[in-house]
Image 1 (cartoon, helix red, strand yellow):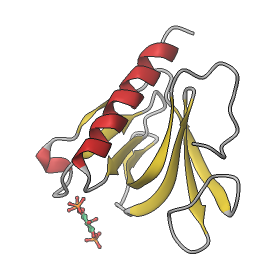
Image 2 (cartoon, helix red, strand yellow):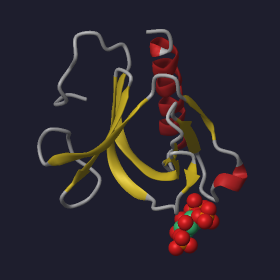
Image 3 (tube, protein in one colour):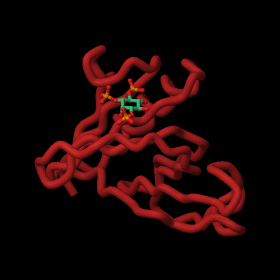
Length: 127
Ligand code: I3S
């Protein structure tokens, strides 16, 4: 992530364009709304940014932070088939009862995100 601000203690850092939808908020099911975001993993935070013309671009230039989730105390795993008809879908659960689906058609990219998110959750679990 060349143009993202770099915090000093940040073992896990990753960014890229991902499709995302919330499926549960505060423990309640919400309607899916798949949207493309410039997604940045920064420490224990996952940031979702949207540009004016779409979901791609560099954070900090014409990207605006839409929202972020705290990974500490959360979990991530491949979503089961009943969660989505799409391929390469990760299901992220936060400590606060939010569930998100993350997806891209690029399998290797999603494998990287799986690894990075798992590492981040593990790294910050006990802090
Ligand atoms: O889990 P669902 O309800 O089958 O999810 C699909 C719907 O949200 C659909 O929109 P409508 O609410 O207008 O029917 C979306 O367009 C689909 O993408 C959702 O399913 P997938 O399998 O793509 O996650």
